[in-house]
Image 1: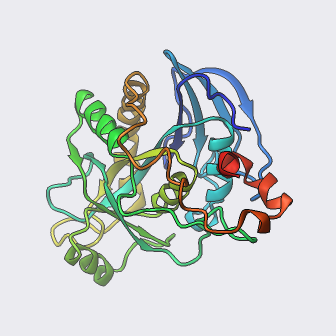
Image 2: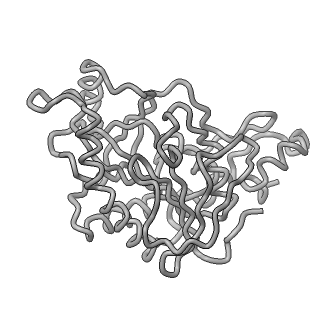
Length: 290
C-alpha cells in the first residue's frame, strides 16, 4: 500500500545543484527496496509547513549518477510507495530561445524524446497498459509552480517544449540548430522519463527547469562550459528552494487534470493473466485496479 495518503504529500526530485532542502523539517530517511532495483539515494521524508514532503536527489548525493544510469522506475515507484500525489522535478537545462536567458525559469508543457537507452514504463512482464500522454505534465501543478517562481522574483516562461537528450555529452551545433527549428524551448537529460512514469503512477507532475546556458547554437555566446553552468546554477538553487516552499503551501486540487485517473481505462491485459508476482510488485501503482 502507499503511505502518507491521509495528508497532502508532495515530492521533489532535486536536479544538479539541489541535493538538499534547507528548511525541511526532517522526520525520517527511508532507503527503499523496489522491484526495479535501488533508487538514486535514500528518500528524505519531512514537512514544510502543513505539507508532508518527500525529497530525493536525482543524481545521488555528491552527483555520482549519469543521466543514462538513473533508475527512473525505482525513483518514481518509491515516490508512489511513500504516498506522493504531487511531484516537482527540478532540472538544469540549456536554452534554445533567445528570450530564455541563463537564470530564467521555464515550466515546460511538452516533451520530445531523443533518448535511446532508458526504461520508461512500469509495465511489461505480462501486463500491458497504455496511458494517455498528449499533455504530459499536470496543468494545475505547472500553473502553481509558474506562479510561485514568479512570486519569488524569477523571470518565468510558462509553457514550452523540453527536448530530452541522452547525454552525458552536450549537443553538437547541428543538433542544437535542429532542435531550434522544431520550436523547442529548452534541452535537458532527465525529465521525460519522470513525466512518463509519474503519469503511469497517477502522480501530478510539473517540471521546474532552470536555464543555465544557451546550449551551443548561440553565435555570440560562448559554447557550453560546465564551470559557467555551475555558476549560474548555484545562483538559481536558492530560487528553486524558495519556489518549492511556496508551492508546498499552495498545492492545487487534484481535479480537472488527467493525472489522478490515468490508469482507469489503460490496462488492457486480462486480469486473470496477470501473475501474482507482478501484482505484488506493482501494487502501489495498479493495486486499486486489480
